[in-house]
Amino acid sequence: MYATAAALELEGIEVRLARPDRNGVVSAEAVGKLLDENTLLVSVMHGNNEIGSVQPVSEIGEVIRKFKAKNLKLKAESYPYFHTDAAQSYMYLGLRPHECGADLATLSGHKMYGPKGVAALFLRDGVKLAPQTTGGGHEQGFRAGTLNVPAVVGFAQAVKEAERKRIERAKEANGLKKHFLGLLEKSGVRAEANGGMENSLPHILNVHFPDMRAEELVVALDMRGIAVSAGSACAVGAQEASRTVREVYGDEERARRSVRFSFGENTGKSEVERALKALLEVIHGLSPKPR
Image (tube, rainbow, N blue to C red):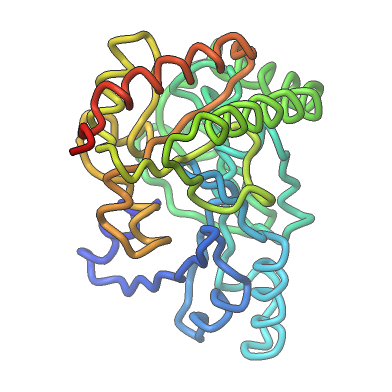
């Protein structure tokens, strides 16, 4: 989303960014202060993919609705449109676009154990978009290109499974997350979770290690068969610090010393404990020796 906004700026479109609080949450009030008669779109990530913060999308949707009614006296179909990216959150939290006031919502297949390379875009009735890929008249002229039917069918099944297993998956992932964090706290290693723990995705834990560089931890853990990341999965290989952590805390050094752990359906307590053991081996092996 951030890269897309930056690309729009290069085309001369004004982009306004709402600042998150120390828990990584953008308030509805902060969004409301950025709205004016020229605002075309408000885009908010429902659950952050790096630190797990869950945004108050229903409150934001209500602020946008009231803004339209009071300031523009326009119909609900009018600008600004409200979009939310629910790719990371849908499997664990679900999302009903009509209930939170979203005009558009995006989902991704591989984020819910579906096929890679397939996604979904929810459009509220009345929302009109120009096609980004032109050519044939596929999908009522909205997007050219032959559909990948097996991927679409697989994605649909993944959505059904997400609906059926949501409560169970969320409970298990959150239990593993708390188990890992509890073991880490007992270990005595200097560490602090980034973002708030109360209102966060159950499967993501981002940890700040003041005595360690994130890239060192990522490489050393990978050699021990433990996959973690220093930023988003999209930025793997870029060797860049987490932009999310940097924006939330205003601290470049903290961003360069933070690592993201995630817990999935194939993760159990034994894997969590093995990961912690490997983490402690790495930290004690790489930490500066006391003088």
